[in-house]
Image 1: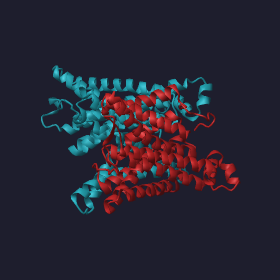
Image 2: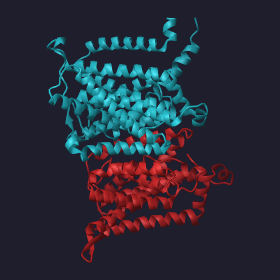
Image 3: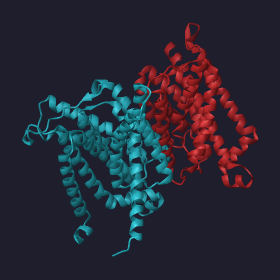
Length: 348
Length: 292
């Protein structure tokens, strides 16, 4: 027990394996639709975890993470399709494509990060907002490559035959996405706990003090952007694999705002907060669907309008209320509640 | 050559609208040190109010009036009900809350009006008048120039020649001292938001007939362009916003005229990056000491 407490890597590894085993059991129990939702949560988690490291730890706001996810998604799509055209198939192909997606997104993150390291506050928000608007438009400009608004189909191999002929595809997708998410969480948890995380926190809290203690502020900020972009790239790539298609509409400005909302509501800067956020991103639209189908609307068109916009309204209101009333988000609330309980309950 | 002349005038007309919208951003920035990322969504909401009034009464001018009044009220409401309660110590909080407002406004509009494009009426003909065989400006462009000029003059008069303008400036630059001297600082802040939001609403009314029409997301790209214009001008300077707006309008008009309209968003991004990296304070930055 003491060993687990002292060795961060070992503890995180044990936690990850435990979570992986629990999720494996869960995926066996769930029906295909729930498994697909689980996979979507895992894909979003990669992106929200990356964003929370950037915005929560290094204090840089990015409204462009939806666009970075698009970079990852399109890279994975192009890789998968090109490899399939050349008859390169097998189990190693998908990880290779995802890796390519992550690397390309990291390169994009590096470029944005270089600019971002010189910008603060609303200026940075404005530039990343422009990125979020420009990237979907780029798919129309280079339409021979990206096929404009229709987007691309993504070739994904069916689950391997060794799993049996009736193995549900959704469970296979959930496994792929969960593996990616767990890996992301493990790596990020270690990074955040270590020197890198401390450096970022120092930069966020006081740039001058950080510089005085020998930290290269610009370098730390660019690194934060690259790490964060890697998460977004993997998340985008996984989403492309899950949907088996990519289109600019799926990576609009709204997605970027959703990601930001998720990490703020979950609790800025905490990886467990990113989990809450990713869960919320999938659960809220589902909930809104149930609520609006329960309501009696005057016409089918009105019902459709209500269903499409209700999650947005709830997200926006929650974002404002959380930001004003409980800046710590869900994770901050939990922290307060457990702290309160610990004080109240008699210690053993 | 004809094309170049046409694009120049078209760009100036677009630029005038961007200047008005950038001016709205500058107004709030000067009053509260906040870049109002919800400006575009708020302006679209005012434009939808105009749409409702215009379809009900058949008069464009009543609609325009409704947009301006709606803008004033919405701006005051946002400041009183939301922005006043945001923690101003963290620069992230204001931006995030404004983005929450964007989601709320766009969702509410989508629920009431639906997410399809609706035609935005123009009060004058948009066919260009020809001078010596070259199509130059339409009557509508002239209306745009006139309206923006009127707003500029009105704001300049308000801020330099009236007591309210003086109090607003005082409240923005030295809130504590102004409060001691009896200025209602909170009220001035509300007034600033209301004015900015009304200017934004006017800009939306002017730009929407020249674009695809009314849509909850119609101002997204306009907002980014106007933000670029405000940054070119230095965020702090009203004349800078006007010059920035006109130059961004011209550049975008040339880009979309010669390279295609779908390149515009990337051109905006490139322009914004170049300006921020080469001259982060903007071309007209005067007050270096006051940084957010």
